[in-house]
Length: 380
Image 1 (cartoon, rainbow, N blue to C red):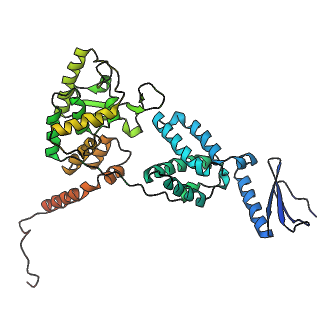
Image 2 (image 1 turned 120 degrees about the horizontal axis):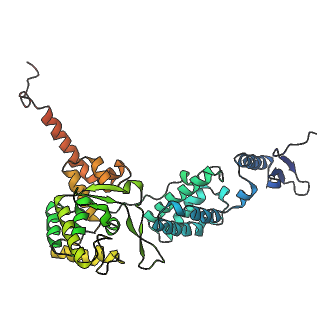
Image 3 (image 1 turned 90 degrees about the vertical axis):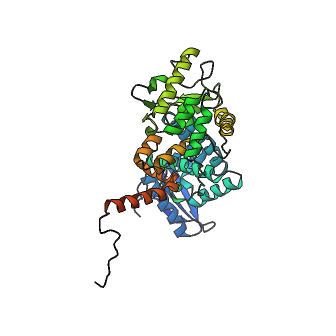
């Protein structure tokens, strides 16, 4: 009988209990699999050979999902924002509660699907589970690239469909009423920027005077303020969330004038060389929720506006007003810092019917002729 080579394996039947078994040498270690039938053992042996061919060592086979995610979470720290790293840590805790002890190479789509169901049953929202899935899919994609797993199981699973939060943009009259209510407020310029540029609150709070060019009426988004646990004040300056978030935005005359007046006020306070929007002591705001909550609601009440609006709706108002007045969607997308035009279109789908009707009207106007509108007798 010919001797089997390294990695070829052998299938035999045990005499004591008639069970079938197969043995295979992997990285100098003997791996043994068992089964009730020869076919079952042969299938296991074939799978073991495939994993060996793809670089899955015996050590990799012992690594659990929890162990891999803990290591992966640490390795991606330099690549993402601190707030994202903390959020990923929360997702990993939820995932490892249900699948952390499963061997990474043995994780199945069914096990992951059940994990998502149990996360929902445990009180997590569909959006949270959906975001956890997106992160896990990225993590397994990295594992596949490193040849730690033979496939990306997360790519084979459908996460719960996240319900997009309803946006409530102001109409033109409401936007004007809000701006009137802001007059004389210490943060009037910030609210004007939020409404006229669509900047996020974190971007506004991270804006520095060095990023403002009043002569050219331009501002550049180079940093934002992000929440970070364990840091005094809870917020730290950070890089923009994506490469597209780093952008230059033109200012309206209203916004440029408001910023000029705000700069003069900051000079009087002795804070005109750092953050554009700072506290009376010159530091950053430790509780942005106060701005977006209590103070914003006071402005709504002052302007006679309903309390259905959130501060983030100022960003939505900016985009909706621009799109509804025919501004090119790509321009709006770049202004908002979206990664792609499709994101802008998905969020502001409510504006599309108006845009399409504008396109119909434009085409009708372009093709209008003296003969247009005259009814032609088809029998003549």
